[in-house]
Amino acid sequence: MTTEKLASARLTYEDYCQLPNDGRQREIIAGIEYMAPAPNTFHQRLLGRLYVELSLFLRQHPIGEAFIAPYDVILSAHDVVQPDLLYVAQEHADRVKPHGLVGAPDLAVEVLSPSNRRHDEVQKRALYAQHGVGEYWIIDPYAESILRHVLTDNGLTELALLRVDSGDVLTSPMLPGFALPLEKLFG
Image 1 (cartoon, rainbow, N blue to C red):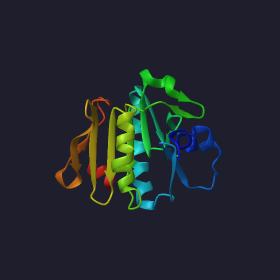
Image 2: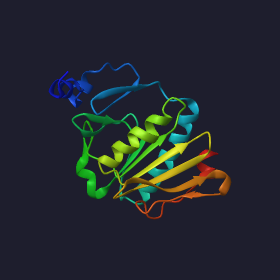
Image 3: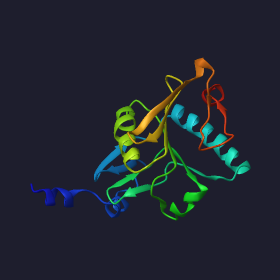
Image 4: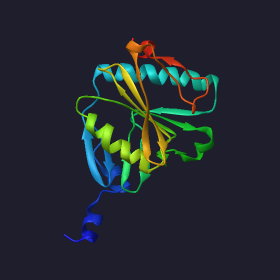
């Protein structure tokens, strides 16, 4: 198959919009469809707690907006993802459209599930780096930890591994004043 035919076989955002709405999370990365089952209860409780804490903070400090999945992030014609949670700084509010986010969020958050670990740690990390996501948090509910990555010239680079058993507190320069003890998040 020629390169031209391979390129034309890749799914686009328009193709993505035509996929069945059957309750499964769907994403396309480099034009290839990825599906995942619905998250488990543990995942949803953790994600819900983080979203509530971040939303309350943003209500008191209107520096941007948070969204929770399902919410389309259109990074390119062939890259459409649904981070578990994302933050868009006020200065990038023009990226927020009625159908989703067009462009990179300032912060993307993924909560690991047994079925998605490699996808989130490798593929999505590389994709987020490629499109300029400033910070990426990977939350491991089983290890009760958060791995913070920040965008550098070398891509998304590991900045800190935060753990409940170390008494760590989640903060970010992108969210001045936000401080969430991991014990509260994973409790």
